[in-house]
Image (cartoon, rainbow, N blue to C red; front, side, top):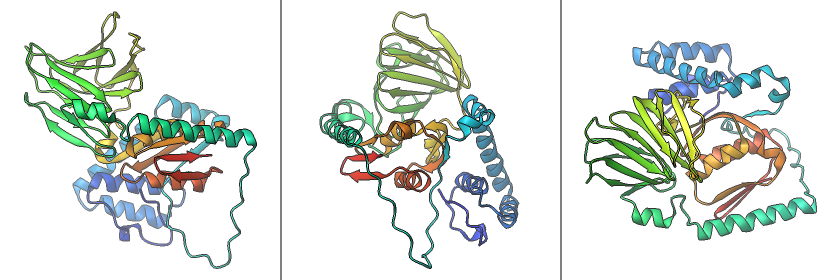
Length: 350
């Protein structure tokens, strides 16, 4: 993701080929606080280039508006106390050559307890990396599943019935269409299914002791530890978990269940941001730094540990490229007091 430079025309900046990505980059720059009247005029000129440009800009505005309308965003806007804890990350702009010697960066000394916590986190993270497999899918899932993706990889698979599976990073699933139902077993990660209609053969995705059943629709299932999330883009999906009564969710709704048969309350999904990884974007709206790092961990090998409690609860808003996790780390160092240590298979934020 790029930030704006107020001393030159944005139109001269290199942009990605996809108009949707370009529009997102424009809006991120315009909301960065550094935009000038020339920047805004240049964006208006960009929008006027063609109907496709105008449509891309409108879709990008809708996405950003939807982010601002979430409940947590509204709470943030209404509470000065919460607002003071917000950190809005953006990919750093290139640094200009200094005209004078810059002061050395202040060294941060941690108390003994802090050093021990970091050392313990390093040991735990390295053990998880070694014994849990170097890839988030794990070696067993990759060996036993019909389809899988590596860390940072996305894949689109057309199944035998004509359904299309959009696989996110570090995902794996298996298929069984031999019976009266079209059975999918999600073993790791996240997949969005565009289901071919076949009323006589329901399409069922099972994961973590629960199942999501549909006939012809578009919905995603994501594994998060011992829980699973089901989100519906089109149609109706019936979700079951353990002995609980099934629930039906429709367009714009989602539900979470755990491996013990627990079924959470149905909530609204942010469809404007949902599945942004299909466009190569990671979109965060007032998410804690801990949550952001857990998401980023799915896109790079190894573990990420936030070693200080004060940092874990920092709130993050931003749009980032899935292919450039280093930009997120650079933003953290530039916009907070945090320091980052990168080791093989381990990143420590402290």
